[in-house]
Length: 322
Image (cartoon, rainbow, N blue to C red; front, top):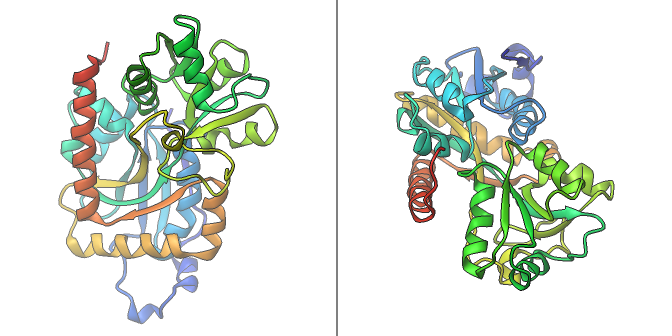
């Protein structure tokens, strides 16, 4: 069953927080904005959307609703968005998952049937193990796998996922004979790491920070170009020499094709104000989200290059939907 979370701030109340006088601003064309997501409540996407809905509503001057279309790994959300009115009332919370679904499962509606509007964040991926693991860094885990063929077990998500790709790339580059155990989602992988079914996992820091703070998990490495402010002592995979490349998870908004340029401009302006808002900055820093603003033209190009890299990975590694 789809669940809907409504932002309780009304457009009238929100107008009180406007940065410029109301008369000097162009009004957003609709009163209510719905953002579809393929993820379940409690997921990384859910945390992102819950955090962003209030400040986005504030700067758009419209109500913001988060509408959950779980299942289909984005197929249902893309299908719903593709036929939605192109008036700025409907968007889809983009992550790499919908690209994977488009390329591997080939649903009726794919990334080609929607348009990319704005990107907000990059979501850091980290390597992690349970607290009493003998590994101090991801390099230790990789070195063990290389030195002990067939003994190491790494946990990843589904075959085409970003997390699985990271592990497959490292496995191939280092010549490690290691079993990569697939999981349906990050929650299942977390349990497997905690109970020792797998030695390490890779996942979103936002979903793991609670267990890290509780001392149940320890981070082994960061899969970002630079170290994270909230984990300054944790090295990156790049500096450890584990990988020479970085695949980054993005979080933004896509809409149906044909949204007027002036409406897109309002969304772009609101997005930049959201990221600059000092109160919201405190909130997204707690979630370990990295600001990564891209307007429509840049975001379109970014997604296009991402699609090319994903398609090449699937071909090189023989990844299919089965």
